[in-house]
Length: 92
Length: 488
Image 1 (cartoon, each protein chain N blue to C red):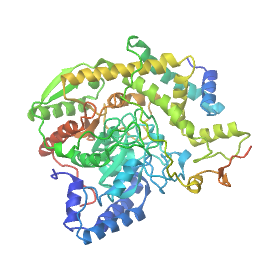
Image 2: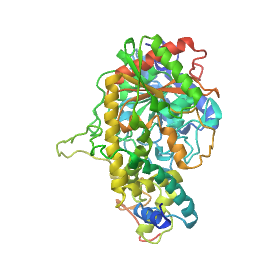
Image 3: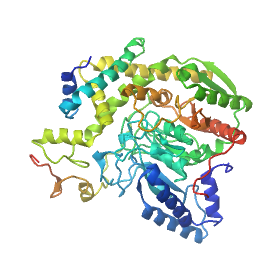
Image 4: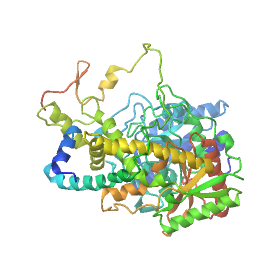
């Protein structure tokens, strides 16, 4: 069973705030989902260790300087920017 | 080749100058203007870009130049595929107004051959959902019956292609998001092998599962698009590109091929859907293929394994939405931490928050071994069971979804009931395998049923060949094949 306290702890780790009126419904949903996730516990324990599922390997490239994106264009997407920097006011 | 393909037919008409690219583009834009209000398939239409490209293509035609296969063909992109200078929102309040500064690799490749971009299509928020209804723009409706959903998460893409509002679309598939809506809307949806198509510029949901692929009216169309987008990309270190072009293999027969049927894929499948699949198996028998039955026990763990791992990856990937560099930022806050928490809580919808919470939970101290690590081990077991299965058969035949399209606003009793509908599609993502959904008749409710074919990694040529042979044989016996919708 996942408790209200655990939901609030996980929400804090995930940087999400949970409104008091959302807490009961969310806890209920999470319990349902976690009960379902528990079914992996029934599977044989000797399933083997971590696998490199997608057959990946390290890919290297030369550490060369190359043109990047335009700063102004990138800052255009920022909710707030000033003097070529992202701006976050201490409080809003 | 060319007998049923919409793209090949349009290409021929352009080259023969039966229609100009501008006329063709205007026909699609006109159809979108008329139909999209009811279908909600597009969340953004880009007539200027489309007509600009069309003018370029017409200039080439006027100069007597020939066109590449996708040149001048009107198409659309799911709204999680980055388009430089064109708003890309993932259908989330979090990214309303976000204008990418670069093109996704797939769009760059298609743009280079003058693909005509009609717009961006609707999807579940951050590709998390099976109905398209978690979109902040509201869900896309199913063109075959507007009281039903188009499916998800690439619901808008499937609806657009099914309604003839685009010749083809690119979607993304993390747990079935190309194949499931294609099945619901009666079109072809193809998820390539993990690593065959670059994910550069695809806004991440679960990076070890995500894959871009085409939704199209026919297998031949899907193959043409796949050949155009499956290339090695140094910007995606997991992308090695395709092993061989698939279009040239479509005509190979399936005589002597072994089509595998695993009973686990049919547990809980609605009887009318199972009947349509049995008929599809008969078509393969008639084509000279052999049906091989076997068991694939780990399939029953696929849905929980998928949700544990995909949500864990999502909780990390979606950590970047902090209200600082792009996207939504809350208006009132007490300090920086409060700003980030409020931004995320207001910017994300309920399903996205549920998945981030689950992912954070299974990665947190005390639960990591029981959930995340166990699911990773099982993922390995699932991969090995597919390897063993492909020693017994060449291609696996399964339903795409256990049912036909759900009614709109279908209220599942809890999120798990909805997650379980992904049972037939998530195995291919877990094992990184290519899978394709091809229409195979109708259910008792008259809605399209999808047949899914799954092949070994990088077996696209054989997989699409089997799908194409089935499609040609089935269309010859079926009544009322789907048209292009815009009356071309």
